Length: 404
Image 1 (cartoon, rainbow, N blue to C red):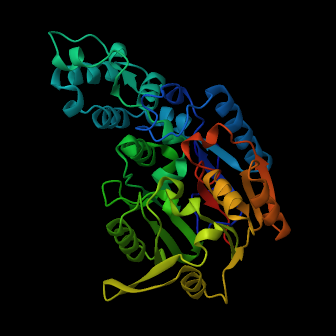
Image 2: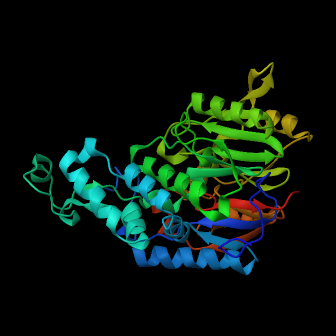
């Protein structure tokens, strides 16, 4: 048994196998750093009411626990990880960038972070620090003089809430994502730290590295054992998709990777904002892209990669999965309602088991159509959680699922 009390080893082979262990991050003071002046840079569309966001997240976690799922919180894992001196040193080194704040301030900040306890260090790594919160440094500093007191010397990580993006488990290996947006890149360093030094993951192998070409977990769908779809758009590059595929093939984790081009815009950040699996052979999909979504099929060949296509995504997926067709839950919505509910993460569901999903309650029409198709919908509130453009799937990183 590990420190967190779980005897279940990490292992994920599908999107819908019964969920047993999941990684969440309860939002904290990093959300309180958001202002109208910086929210765009930090990738939030509105300023969340933090207390309500925390209450909504607590309710989400309780829904999962009530289903017998082990909920592991990232903040707690980070604190436990930082008890290891090696992890502490690596955390301080990766967090402080003297190119941003200058040599003198960087030295003072490193010295300060090296002396605080693990709880305070975890808080600084996640919630950031402003110039007025920095320790005093000897001598004068142009950097300090030219920044406002509430400017960030250490940028907060409000998007850490979306744990799906910074890592994804495939089989018994974890892929640490290479996040594309500057506001999110330090999230990978924190996730990498936890998987490298926390005792819970001491026997877990790696499937992909954070310093590779950009791939984000929200773009990765495990359609079936051995079949992986990767969205290519705003956050995941073609080079990232191909590098990820090569890694999957080298580790014998997949026989087919489908690279799926998606529109590079805010409404469709990742593949899972327009399509998620709700059963072994079924997806819920944004109606506007159902017939236009395509895929390139990548398969291993002579130590390299064979690329074919593009073909219609639904056809390619069904062929790779070895089924007659991949069912689409036809939301049947008028274009305006469909666009509204897609924007509010109506297609971003978290499967707890085949035919059982968690979804935001506000997407009334999409949820009704799912239920009409025989899918059990567990509704949660997300009025504040959704301000960062992410739904239940975005907020959860499955660590263990039972095999189908």
